[in-house]
Length: 156
Image: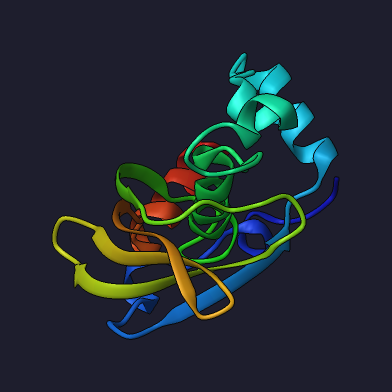
């Protein structure tokens, strides 16, 4: 890859303001669940076996909660604030199950910006249609523009 640091980097702390937001949408597939189960070793039959899951309170297979939450990770790491930031904390509350094939819309909204400590608080939600299936908040460290320039200059 021949991309520059600036082309790859996300927002700097100076660029962020309360109210900024982004939404990412995805429908999870059977392959997504299989890959997550292999990666995480979470092969709970509630997620992987329809006959088992049909006899539980959710009445059928559901997407792993952390798979749904992975959309929040994608937002933080690739969009808002994006590359260069470090995820410090995530609070999650799972509100309803997600089924394979349902379209999930994850949204992150900048709630608070602490420029001195270089931290931003994001309110996070995931929806299926109009129904909230996950809600929470994230705390993210975001680099300052001047500090990033000093680090790059020191690498030369």
